[in-house]
Image (cartoon, rainbow, N blue to C red; front, top):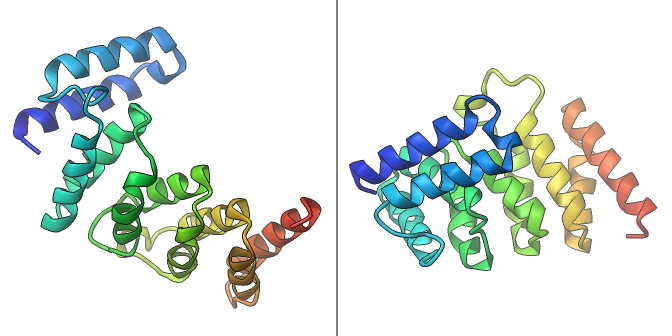
Length: 184
């Protein structure tokens, strides 16, 4: 990602997060339009460009570019099955800070291929989350497993329900109950 591309993404995210712009569709559309004028490529016309940026960021272990690429993909609703391979790889890495966003993508699209890495991530502690006594990432992984709802996801939730960590255990049990109520 070029310096100018990084600046365009940073400016977009600052504008989006300022004055609750995300609650005003007209403001969001203006922010997106300004971004598209400043960014090197029209990502709405060439969405694969963002996937390429994410792959380069992964190969270079560039946490900042992972963040910027994920922000672009999220802002412009670019996530698709095409992102599956790179997101699976990124979720297992500990050198970036976008784990929760990746889990959200897997949960939103109910991606069965993500079950194993979601289970592993629920049990993993990242240095940058050492302060988190509520295990937010683990809980998010557990909820994603519940949403995916496959038999394999259910098996992983049963394993998590045996955890010594009460937060992980309680959330896994809740997801198993929800699955049962949905007839899964």
